[in-house]
Image (cartoon, rainbow, N blue to C red; front, side, top):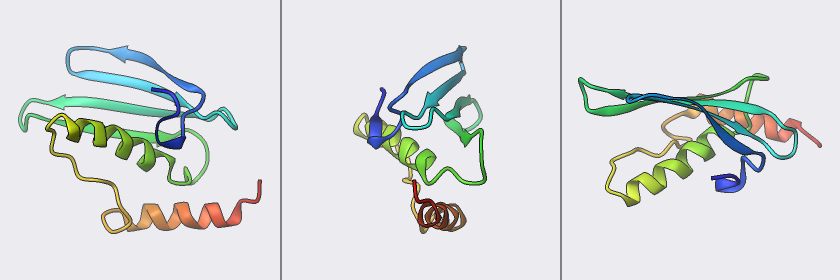
Amino acid sequence: KAGQGGIDGGGCAIMKETDNYLYVQFESLKKGYIDDVEFALTKDTKGVQVRSGSRVGYTDFGVNAIRLNYLASHLRDKGWSIDEITEKSHRDYWTASDEAREATFD
């Protein structure tokens, strides 16, 4: 869904989908940056592995965590057990994102 969590205003597109894999590209509205998000089902643990990353730059200003937390909240509503990405659980990620936001003036 475009715009979830106040991000991805440029929408999203499913690039690849199989029985156990999903690859989606999300686009920011303001600058048109593309982020890649992948979901893979794991047979051994009956879980889902997730990778979400920006294509450009050192940090994503916290956008990937906002996106994944948004998606996770809707899955939790359907009974899934998913931890939220927080400053406590991912301290280095949040520190880099906060520092980048403070240094950006546009």
